[in-house]
Length: 116
Length: 301
Image (cartoon, rainbow over all chains, first blue to last red; front, side, top):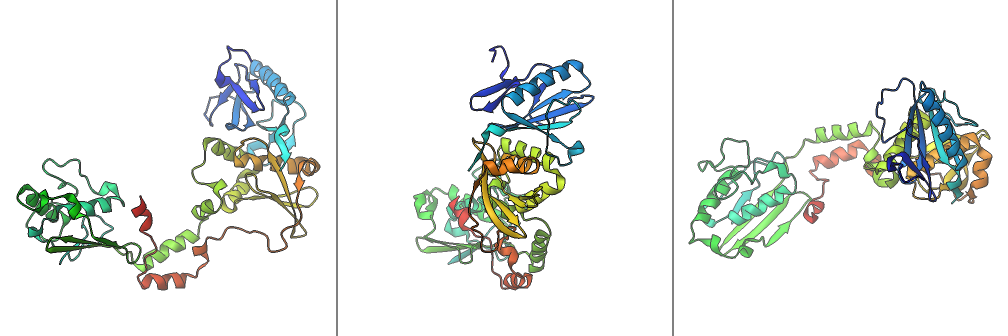
């Protein structure tokens, strides 16, 4: 992790690993209205915060590119992306690849799942 | 024996039958009463805006400081203040003497303070204004019409009403994942049910609690799948929900499977003990004048 990166743009995904969220994407605490044309939300489950929310705009090419990179990085770190249904309808579809049309995605830390 | 009934300004206290004895120096007993009542609602008494010797300005009534009446606490206090200004009187003595010799809570709410000041004895009682039984019964009926979240919160600490921020976020995420209907079920019952592709029904609880698997309408297994680490309780539900619906076999591979320990009826929705009592029984109790609220917690504060 580069030292110049703000702590606010870093997600601690557990076991000492972090993922840096590039600048065009936004890490938000709550459901702030950022005025995006087509907002996309990722919820990354973390032990520390419950989940961290990454928001980006699907109408912005740079943001799509950054989101794609971040998506792949999260997956490579063992996070499994589940697509949330449109308008919040239930869904549990695992995304095999980045899809900018997915309005909401849950990233689950599969490596943290164990038998109790 | 002088009898002083508790103050009149507090809506929860009975205002009838008050009297005072000007000559006996009641300032500290009255202070004690004020402090005592302050435990219930500190907003009732404003002891900071007084300009003179004490606590006269603590009510919106027009009789503040009025010494002509005999039925308000203001008069007690005014009399006590006047008495205190007389340096030759009892007020100069040690304050310990004004401590009540006994405090009695005979029914859990009413209080009785007994004083023994030289030859004078005080007997101060206070009791709440009694809400009519019919109104209290209506309140219970209203309570029964909605999920008793308070009762469940005490029963199941994972669904407390004041969760940490990470738990708040997790719940918002759960709401998005499982939808409004199931989320309401979760809040009301403390768990969600998931029907897997195999036909098994999973009863999923927050936190580290085991998931109960139902087959053919009967509890079949309890399995334990958790997130290692200090994840908020609701994140565990999200994880189980997503895994069960998407990859049930993976869920079972991860699971630590217990035996069927539920030979008896499976745990159902929470039942708050008071909720199970017939309304007629509760109403009869109200009419008998029993007071349910306990004073002990206030005293301990």
